[in-house]
Image 1 (tube, rainbow, N blue to C red):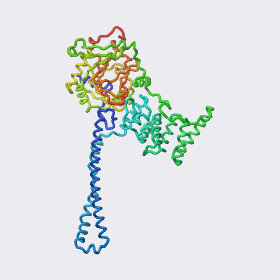
Image 2: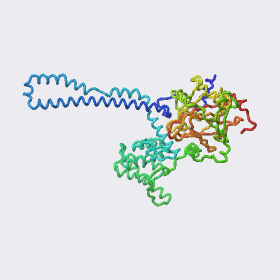
Image 3: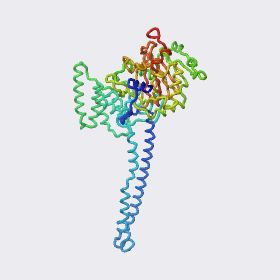
Image 4: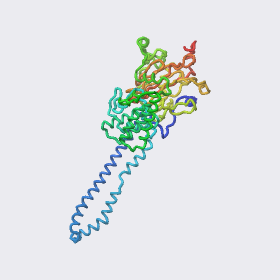
Length: 535
């Protein structure tokens, strides 16, 4: 019955799906396997190079020996062949040794490398994965207000590495955005590609190609004077370009028409370089986008001295629960209203590693239910991989469930299975509610709504990855081994809309969490109803 109840909830709530061949790599846990795969392929490539070099050395040795012989034999052919040994060796060379040389040249040392490639290729990222990774960088760029040069030079907040982007890398980023009709990011990355090319960096892509994409993207952003200036540069480089001439005439006519309609004089293109802030980022579906991203950057926090004075830390024994009497939990207030608490030393390092070990083979791209179609689908606002673990999987899961029950005083008999999630490159979950806002149906009547959330942090994160609450301006940073807990519903059963929260994109690092969604059923005497709707 427990598993059946979970399955019903999995159909209704955000859950995970089976991996597909075209699945985006959104988990650092799984991407680490690709690192070792690449290392193995590099070794295979080295073996191939060594075999080719050995083969080439043998061919060179044959060539040197035969060159010396032919110099002697061609100087006096009749005199050379007058010696019976030379005549014999000529017959032998042409009949046997040249055949052996032919066989040597026809040998294919690449067979082993090609075979190894074929074995691993089925696990390689595909075009969708590459596009997803590019979008992840753009998501980080937006959320943390990073210009393209910062990424290109590996200068991220608090981190400086030699992970650099070349001219061609930046061009491919821009092209990915362009193909998605995302001209805002196309401009930023094409401009960075052009900047690095102009600085003398070598590249496969030509300046004309970059200007072609950049000029049209700038036009799409509504900057006609700059689009004209860039297109003129393109025509100067390649006067026979297929589109440039036509585009230039079209842009100039359009600008002339606009000037006449608005009765304005000609405005020359700005000489300021295109950078972050030159153009406004288009609005999207999320009304609290700015507040959410500001919190992710550590801005707009509503913590003040008055509120901080109402926050305390204490030892928590779960109302004298036997599991916590000898070792009570260290409890810290993170927020006063709604009340959010953090528990220290919730999970040990060994427990975390075991949970990750159990989850890794089951990780699949997390999905959400499409509100229009009701079909489970992946979404750009939830980018992670998740797995569900039950007590039968390992004693550590049962132990963690018992600990959650002891700490919260709530039964986990009607809770969902332990969900483990790993956020990879740009991994995030945009603002959402954990409780259901739809009318109760037969599935919800099984165990009720999601009463509370217990969230375990199973890793530290170098940068980004905070849990933020845009409604009241709180940001909770991941700390390995700790857990945070809050109620999603008032005692009346009504949803607490202040608990709308988000998982900020991971900027640097790998974020592992596990959460337990605790349901209403079975809590009647553990958390009785209040007297008012908002108790």
